[in-house]
Length: 213
Image (cartoon, rainbow, N blue to C red; front, top):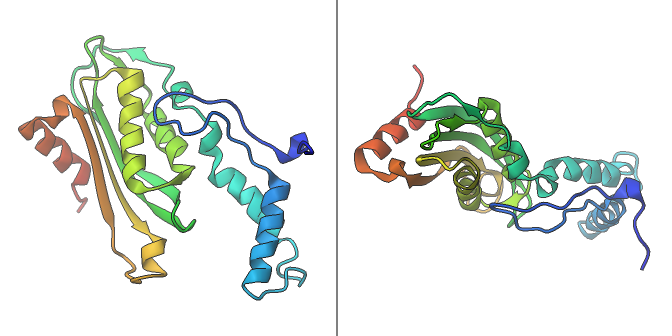
């Protein structure tokens, strides 16, 4: 069996919370061949002007869209700061773009990610929460697992007292095919630790889902 050229393979070893692969590679040549076959299978001519470069474009876009398979949440959350903060930290409206693993079409929306720091008071940078969401979103996904993976990574690497992750998204597999209900949004949540308590959970959910006037 031939070994792909270095320029055709991108990836690294990853491990930790939510990881589903020991290695993640992008074989550009293999994607291009598969896309060409798909075009033929749906009745198109892959050699016509508009499509002749499409397999290469798809391969490059897939390398970007699924880059999270070769990224580790541990690296994102490895830097922390000691500010002795003991209350909820919440970042709202983190844009989410992912690909449904059932039909390989996108879903998109926003994530709200919050946590109560652990006894040490250590926190991570606010931008790291957005990067963490991106690591897990840039993989073939389902929204439910994406929500859980972000929460579990925060638990494993920050050791917080509580975690809340809420994702609101529209799925194009539901909007443009099947039942064809554009605009329908799915909301999923994962709550851990102290934020499971009734009043605390209600407050966190209201902050995450509050609508701006």
